[in-house]
Amino acid sequence: MNKIMEDKLVYVVTENKRENHDTVTLLLSCEKGSVPPFVPGQFISIYFPELNTPEGKSYSISGPPGKETMEITIKGIGEFSNRLCAMKRGDRIIGSSPYGFFYSEQDDTGLVMIAGGIGITPFRGMIAHTLEHEPGRSISLFHSARTAADLIFDKELANVSGLATHYFVTRDTVSSPLITPRRMKPEDIVRNCRPELAEFFICGSIPFVRDLWHGLKSHGIAEDRIYTEAFFSH
Ligand SMILES: Cc1cc2nc3c(=O)[nH]c(=O)nc-3n(C[C@H](O)[C@H](O)[C@H](O)COP(=O)(O)OP(=O)(O)OC[C@H]3O[C@@H](n4cnc5c(N)ncnc54)[C@H](O)[C@@H]3O)c2cc1C
Image (cartoon, rainbow, N blue to C red; front, top):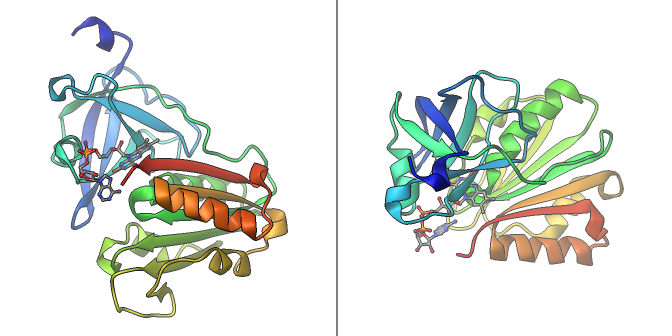
């Protein structure tokens, strides 16, 4: 192992779970000791030295803390992510400790989670953790995807009490009480939560995050109540 890799952790894949046609969740343990502590919303960097990306690529932790394994959920779109999606039980991955600041530091605000596509990943762990440890908090999830088949975690979250879900699909004609077939608008969000009591978390592509951030601001949400995590430039 070269110098750059010396302070990194070795994660071991314990399971590869398919979430939909192009997305999988990997359950990871650590080769030495237990998985590192983290706050839901944080991410790890992963390194494939042979793919010429010395800075690695980031993946949000998609499960709650306090478990034997740490989960990451990956959409296969390029060489790096497809290699992760193809990982099997027993494969080893070099990664960093968790880091990032995409989480609430309050314990009584409502949590409004706004996801574009694969940007839903940090919210799954936040939802599970909040329901278990801060059950009094209101939680709303707004998820936009291209089609109903591109939604992730929707079946798992369907019967979670204490969570209000709102789905939007931009390239699908499907319509159900839970799925609206058009782009998500900021007014959909502020109308369906109590904005004065809430903190807002936006995660997805850079344009998605930027548009929703401006939209929430134009509806009177203060900047210090809006947290963002941008995954892609696409
Ligand atoms: C903080 C952070 C957290 C992240 N968390 C996750 C995560 O939880 N899960 C995850 O899958 N990824 C996550 N990402 C993105 C991840 O780091 C990679 O950028 C991603 O996996 C693509 O890498 P790649 O090399 O396979 O594809 P690339 O070679 O970078 O891209 C392949 C092609 O897909 C296009 N593309 C890029 N993004 C998208 C998109 N969203 N939709 C459609 N096409 C796109 C590119 O323009 C390119 O043409 C995160 C990024 C950051 C910064």
